[in-house]
Image 1 (tube, helix red, strand yellow):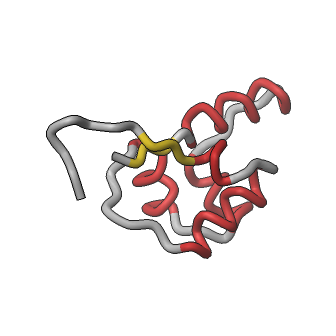
Image 2: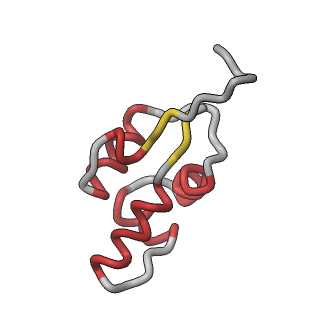
Length: 78
């Protein structure tokens, strides 16, 4: 299973900047839709566009491994 670590990136950015960071603000500043940000934040996605990954990595100043992680699930195989 691929899991989003976007909520942790959001919390780190909020702490660094000293201000709350809403889904809407992330969307406005990154150019993504609020729905895309929300789905990534709560981990409700089946696929992710490469452009979305690039945009979020640019916005948060991180790498792909900081944004997504692989979590093995024994009962789930490709």
